Length: 111
Length: 112
Image (cartoon, each protein chain N blue to C red):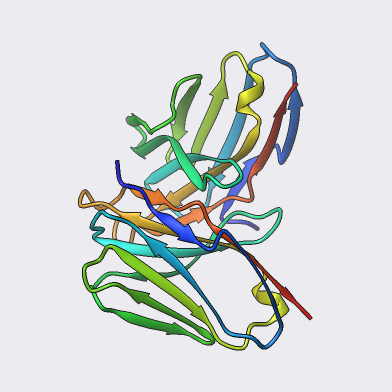
């Protein structure tokens, strides 16, 4: 069974601060996805990273896939209150289509 | 209109009752999924279907069944609900190329 651990589980910061959340596993994934979920809604796909060492930027969000494809990080620069939500990472196994989800990082950005 | 629609959005039921959660999609995807979300446990896969004639168990299928009535419709049933099935349930679709999931807004189920 492939497991994904996310840290921290909870994070509360002030608007304007930077933050990084982590997604770690002992297993290798063929790709890794990040989602954001807001209260009362389903998760929304933010990005998919495929290549070891890959870095993708989405405005103030920077996603990195580890060289060994076992871990990933999400860095947010100058957080805004609209970034508040639950961030989930999900790894795809070698079969490609099955995803393993991490437990999530719940982020609160205070004004 | 939402691409993936789940009904009902909220449901309260009693132990032993049979209930059905419905999902329909307009994304044209072949692949559909049912997940369950519990605090701190992320999303766990209950059942998935890669096309109308294909049904597969996920990691926590006990106590659940599904029906793929058409490419666009995938329903989840709890034959005899029990309190530990209280959770948020999500339907999702994916395309074959990217595998990224497109989720519905969820059904909040409480079993008393």
